[in-house]
Image (cartoon, rainbow, N blue to C red; front, side, top):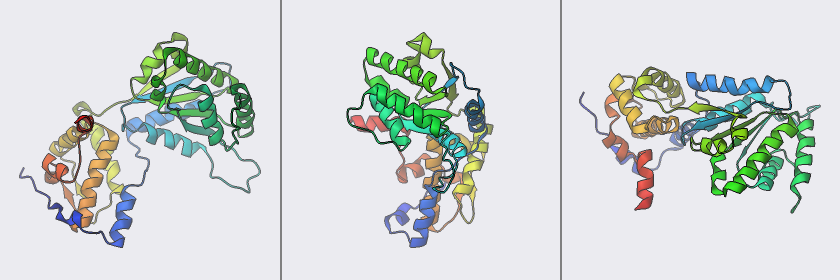
Length: 303
């Protein structure tokens, strides 16, 4: 196949107001319902219907950065939580989602949970007091699940502090009688397995990179992206050779695939071609559009 070289000079000018609207739409976060993501979401959502017990089931969602973990968790939260209505007779918040503190600090974790619940946090409030108030508010709002994202943050602390933080998580699940879903990079599992009593409580689910062995599912995923990158003449990129190159450039990561296709779609809008074809998907063109391979980014930082 003869590859096409993009003329990227169009990217130096200012986009028109209409272009700006379209380019902004390309950046909007949306649910991408490929098969694996749907199955994982269903598995997490099944915990919402679990009867309350002293030992609730918990999950840990593991995947590389930019693999689509947050998209799945955001979808779980958004589907479970009703629209905010000041006039509602009773406000409910079935799923709360917070980011793990930057270090294994029990008090800071409680503070983040309280803030997500709209609670006032007093300075120097004891941890026991925070936990009691969280329990009351969770019962009032009918909280059924806690999601803790970026769990690997707690690796920044000592082994003793990590163990204390994990015990606090276990205690939180028992006190609230709700499942907890952790999310982090694969190395997060090492933190959990350091304590068998904790590891047994968190079943791992993996968001895996795509490989050539899963090229058919990858093609389905790419098809699901195209409507959010609407072009007048569309994207003709489903040839196996094109998908293989796209898989290679993205290193099998969901977020990287979306970003690559967004770059090509943005170029198609600004150049006026309104079309992306398989012969355009080359490393030379992608480099000209400013893309850097995920594995190369740390190398640039180290220079």
